[in-house]
Amino acid sequence: MSGHGSSRSGGNVGGGDEPRSTFDVRVWAVREVKGKRRTTWQARWWVAGRPSENSRSFTTKGAAEARRAEILTAVKKGEAFEVSSGLPVREVLARRAAEPPAVARTWLQVARAFVDAKWEQGQAPGSRRSIANVLTAVTVVLFDGPVPVEVEELVREALPGWSFNTGARTTVGRGGVRREVAPPQGWAGVVAWMEAHSRPVTDLADPDVVRLVLGALTRRLDGRPAAANTVIRRRQVFEMAVKYAVSRGDLEVNPLVGADWQVPRTVVEVDRRAVVNAEQAGRLFAAVARRAPELEAFFATIYHAAVRPGELQELRLDQLTLPVSGWGEVLLEANNPEISPRWSDSPHGPRQARELKHRAKGEVRPVPLNPRLVAVLRRHIDTFGVTPDGRLFRSGRGNAVKATRYLQVWREARKEALSPAEQASPLARGPTTCGTPRCRAG
Image 1 (spheres, rainbow, N blue to C red):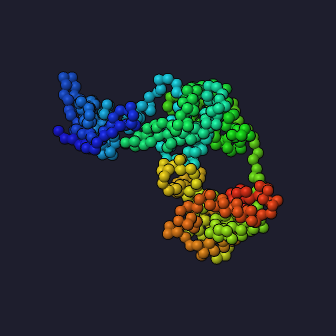
Image 2 (tube, one colour):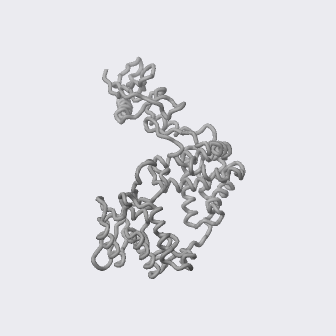
Image 3 (tube, rainbow, N blue to C red):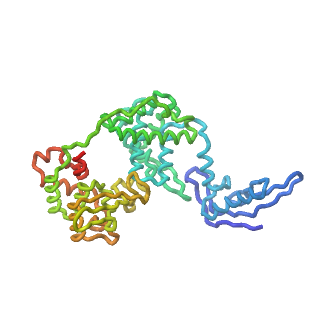
C-alpha cells in the first residue's frame, strides 16, 4: 500500500463555528474491489481527525485514478481539508456556493456576497470603492420602508464603510479563508437594522421595484441629476450584481432585460470658467516654481498633456522621448492614484501601481508632449534628477507625492498668482480642473 501526504497541522475553516480543517492528509493507491457481479476501483485517502478513511468507488480504474490525482494535487498545493467531510476546503466551499438558497436571500446579503466575489478577483482599490458607492445608492431604496431620519446618515456611512468593504468586514484565516468580524460599536446597531429591513432580492422581479432602483441611480447624493455617463456606469455595476444573483440562483432571470427605462438625457459640459488660458497658466506655474520648484513639471504635465496625478506618480525616464527641440512623447503604462488604504489588500503597506484606467494590464497610452512641456520636463530632470528606478516625481523620502502636499502647493500658488476676482471664481480651483489647451478648444 502506497501513500502520499502532508504533515502540517490543521486549523479552522473560517473560524468560529465553522468546521475544523487540517493539512494532515494521506493519499493511498487505487484499490481494485472484485465483487460477484462487477469489479470497481476505489480512490482512497485519509484525513487526520476522521474515524475512517475517505473512499469513492468508480466503475473504471481511469476514473478512480483521476479522482486520486485531484486529491493528490490538492495535497501537493498545500490546500486545507475539511475534517468532517474529508474533502478539500476548496471543494466544500464550491459546493456550498452552488447550492441554491433554501429561502430567498435579502438584497443586502446578495450585494455583500457580490462585493466579496469581486474583491477576491483583485480589483483596483478605486474600482472597489466605486462598486461600494453604487451598491449603497441601490440599497437605500431596497429597504422595506423609509430609512428613519435618526439613522439615515449612519446607513450611508456603514454601507460603503462596512457592508460593502470586504477588507474591513472580514479577516483572512487559515487556508486563506475569510471570516466575518463584528462591526465597530458605532455601526453595530445600524448594521443590525439594515439586515433586518433589507427586502428580499426576489422583489427585483417586480418591474416597479427595478424602476425605483434605476431612478435612484440617476440622482446624486444631494438629489441633483447625475451625469449620463455616471448613470451608465452605475447601471453597469447594478447589472453585474443582478447577473451574479441569477448565477447563484437568487433570481430566475435578469429583471433588467427588457426593462422599460432609458438613461435620462443630461448635458454635462466642462465649466469653462475653471479653464485657464496660457497667460494665467504661466502665472500659476511661476508661483509654483517659487514655492515648490520640484512640482512645476508635475502641474505643467497635468495642464499640457491631460495626465492624471496617479499616472504622474509612475512616470519614469524610460517612458519619455524629449528631443532638444520639437514635440516629444510619453508612453504611460501605470497608474497609482491615492485611494484610502481601506480599499486595498494591504492597508498598511505601500501604495501599489496598477494598469492604466480602462486599459488592460501592460497596455500603454501614448501622449504627445508639446515643445513647451518638453522643455519643462528636460529642465526638471536636469535639476532634480530621477529616483533609482527612474521616477521623475517623488516626496522627500522618495515615495509618491501625497495629494495633501501638491494640493496645498496649488492653493498657495493660486492665491499668489490670481487676482481677487479670479480667486473668487471657479478658475483653476484644482490642478485637474483648470483644463488643457485641448480642453479649451473643445
